[in-house]
Length: 166
Image 1 (tube, rainbow, N blue to C red):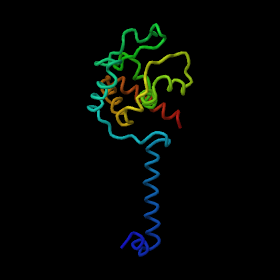
Image 2 (cartoon, rainbow, N blue to C red; image 1 turned 135 degrees about the vertical axis):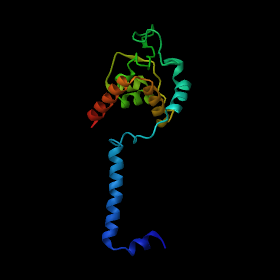
Image 3 (cartoon, rainbow, N blue to C red; image 1 turned 120 degrees about the horizontal axis):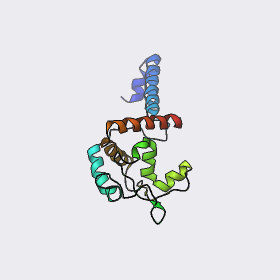
Image 4 (tube, helix red, strand yellow; image 1 turned 90 degrees about the vertical axis):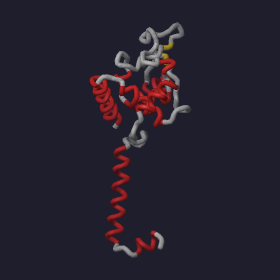
């Protein structure tokens, strides 16, 4: 017996209830996933993020998230050095969406999309070499190293960013 035969034998009100239930699940999934441009949050793996950070980020941002020397001043080529990702840097000053875009698209593209001019970022985009889940794992690892105060402030910035986006 196929699904059509089963549905044909049910009273119409139960078919309607099943349809409404399915729509509610789809609606809840879409609501939880944001505006449709961003995938729904998924579980992150900070241990995997630490490994991926070491493989992809530490060469510029430091094995201990310390960044490059004089990271606040452009180098001779006008490019900003890699900032620290520990509490002494400014990573925690930004919401999750901006951090994700900066990592996936790179600094130049993200700044361009934000309308920021006059800043030359050396941050490459990792969208071709890391999956979205891997990027989220790296960011979760970085955030896990911050003291509670910085984590809370960064969460507030994420909420403000999400509110502004809607």
